[in-house]
Amino acid sequence: MRFLNIVLIIVFLFIPFAADASVKEYTLKNGINVLIIEDHKAPLATFQIWYRVGSRDEPAGKTGISHLLEHMMFKGTHKYSSKEFSGIIKRNGGSDNAFTTKDYTMYFQTLSSDRIGISIELEADRMANLLLDPKEVASEKNVVMEERRMRYEDDPQNLLYEEVIAAAFKAHPYQWPVIGWMSDIESIGREDLFKHYKTYYSPDNALIIISGDVNPDNVVAGVRKHFEGIPNAMKNSTDKKTSEPEQKGERRIYLKKEAELPYVLMAYHTPSFPHDDSFALEVLSAILSGGKSSILYRNIVREKQIALNAFADYNALQRDPFLFVLGATTAPQKNIGDLEKALYEEIEKIKEAPPPEKEVQKAKNQIEASFVFAQDSSYSRALYTGMFAMLGDWRLMDRYLEGIRKVMPEDVQAAARKYLTDDNKTVGILVPVKMGEK
Image (tube, rainbow, N blue to C red; front, side, top):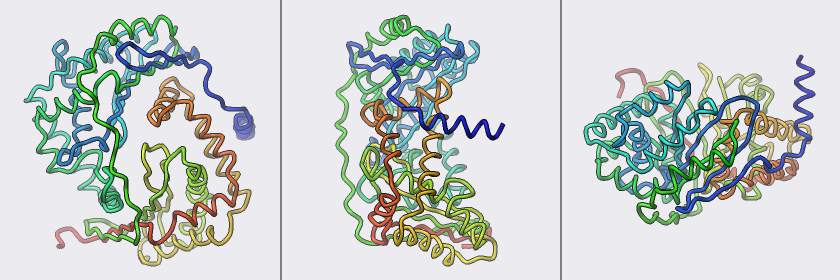
């Protein structure tokens, strides 16, 4: 069976991956874009609606408003009461959820394909008729504040990541956490949310993707019926953001927090896809951190035994330039300074000599296999289509794989030399303290 799986992966990797011919595109009169993806493997369908608004689009002093608005979208319209949206989906055998990122907010439901019309009607209603009851706003703010306490303020490693991002960016709004700063969340009122809703939850700022066992002509007729009459409430804000100036020296922060072990994070400014260097950076990340045979695990965790874990992370699919991040947790009785030095040594090895062709090809295979197999359901196909659409065009998926396939060892070395430099990095160190210690 293991041999068969390997053969299937190899077959997939040598099949040309082109823009999916089953995707059909429509544009409604009010500007809303619609993509329909036919997939008849199972009698299911996924409805997704993407809004081009995330934490990068928030006004100063109101960080977290996009995430809070996501919560409020489940709190009722003039037609449906609070929490009734999810109740209707569940009673019809479906599931639903949503998430907010730095760049966009997405809502989705998966249902039997003959009931996808329910999603269409419900999403159109809350695009146009969100209630934003002041009592619900006050209640949900408390929920989000508690979420922040649990996920960040009580989690030392997540809190360090938040601090490093805030230090790495001094001008661009990527410095703001998606969940928002506590004082900002507390200050958000009903009118703030209503203005944000009317500015960004507008047809000309939205994308609908329906993927699954559907007939495009039939399903788009339902979308037109419910969405085409929704007006563009306000002119959307411009997408011009302050460009992050070039970093000209290392930034370093220390976080003292109750924790078991020291932890280090290093963040380097890098371009995002589809910049030509993004492909080599993606491969570099996989070489350093692509499983237990990767460089960081093999050399730092297993051989030197100075870390419990070590990783590299590069998210190329950001609307603006973001970061290449490395991190590791110190093994018990080991020194955080030695661990940080060991991470630098692995970077320097790649700068001094290109990684072996075998390592580069393995990383490329991992990236491509992960990309292809991640799209094995109607939900995930729609998800990947939407992520690239948020960057400008869903057909950029073709360029992504083409770029990965062309990466050579010298490209990886050049990317490491260009971006993983001392003057371009922000370092965060978690310093454990005992409970009650100041």
